[in-house]
Image (cartoon, rainbow, N blue to C red; front, side, top):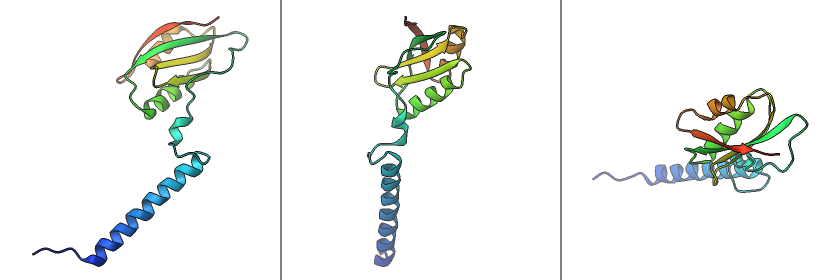
Length: 126
């Protein structure tokens, strides 16, 4: 008969509990006391207006399934020269950005269309 050693089981449970507590504490500290992942800090909307010489552009992006997707898209778009701000809304499957007028829509679309993501432009703001 194969029986578990009670001491080993107790130690494993203690180690697992400490590890879970450390993860929860790290998330709480990183989130400013909120119990949410750090990835939630990606804005889902832009609360300002485009600056002089900039335009607001919106894109519908299919293929997003989680907050990691929002991080990936946000970082990729902000990496484009001429893009000044970016928001990714996971629920609406939308990316909104402020870009210099000189940034071609085709460059933004080629940046948003990769891996499992497929984007189409919704339009420009005023």
